[in-house]
Length: 42
Length: 565
Image 1 (cartoon, rainbow over the protein chains, first blue to last red):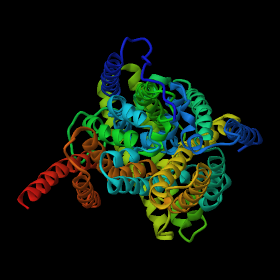
Image 2: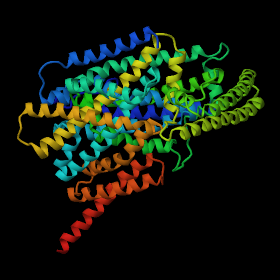
Image 3: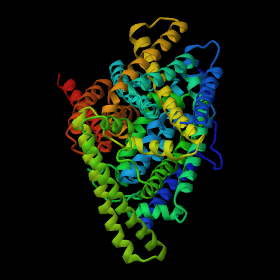
Image 4: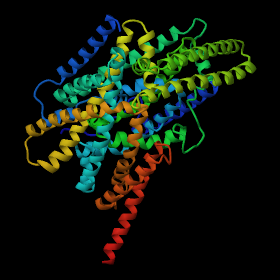
């Protein structure tokens, strides 16, 4: 099997760590939005 | 279904399957058949892992679940983005570096053959059983449309998937999945727009959600901690994290998808994009179920959505009692509709006092219709003990076939087929990889040539296909299909994940300790699960932690014993 070396970087950000932080932020934002949705329509 | 719908359905299915077969044509070797020569870009990896996870069950059960009990199920996916991150940091680079075909291959390098064989065996049991359920889900669609028993439809659908997976291997799976997901996104978007369009003129999108909300259907978030509540933020974040980590990290049907990535970076990016998209997608599917719920507050739904079971009851000696219940149901619906209209006016006038009062009245009315439905299902069971009385899987289907315009019905039915075919094909491919690489090649025939292993892979796919079809024939006796798959996974995933976590992070534990720890844990998890001591999502956490703790303790014990000798 041929594998390219691990040189790829994620788009829009400078490192994989930044991408992970972005994903965690996205999750927190979704929970907040869904919470507001739940309260608003209850 | 009209001729136009059949045309759209048949054209979509034939076009996609032909495309998959065309792209995977030509001579193959074992690496091409099982790993697609590791050449996929990130978007192919992303769509492939999404298509593998989003089976037809996702599109049948989830709207039905929102219809009957609300949107709390979305919390189940909260652990997924976190799991994607851990996967990208640990699992993906290791699997790529070691150039493995299956996740379990790594365990022999780290521990021993016993541990590899045990985890491969647990995977084969779990995936074999759940793939049966995955095949069964779309077969109920054809059953409802053609009004024939699900046995024949299960056999028909299973055969199509098995045929193209056996022929094209992982390449056929990936190419079909890319197109499948694109069509699924378009179709769902169209369905959402159509539900809103079909609502009464004075009921817009926001008001429709408000009405459903007042009747307890928009409960997307629950922060209360309760061990026995299946869907809370905490069970989703913690239990869901462990379930998703074990599913994506140790289930070969997913590992096989991202191992097709052309590099570590492409596999990572595919998984992380899945983490970004999955929760909003699931939320929107549940939201469609909520809109369908509001639609049925203005249009009387059938007393039971599964027309096959209802027809059976109508032809039985219980028909007079059923007719009485239908009348009772009609009265209850008419009374409820009056209250819904009052609520709608109160919402317009923003009269909080009336809104609160109507909410209580409507929740009571809702309970009343549920009671009548309960009496209908009792009759069904009296008539036939083996009747399928779970209605959730038929709610969306019934709506689509009855109210959507020509052409769109065919497209949505095609989506459900495609989703099922995508996840079933991945599962069959992974069952074949594990059977051939971890069992046949490792234990039975070590010295065969590439051609022999390729032949064995095709045979293995075919045999597993047949086994899964047989499983599917018995899946109708299980209630909510989506939950059944997840519950089954929770019995096994935690244990397998525990083994992998020990492998990655607890370096001093050896194979013997982790092997016995896994056996002991599986026994405890089965006892906890069968006795319903905790909600099933927690079994993943408990299973994983127990393996780690037992492995460390057993290692200590074995070390002391060796020292004493």
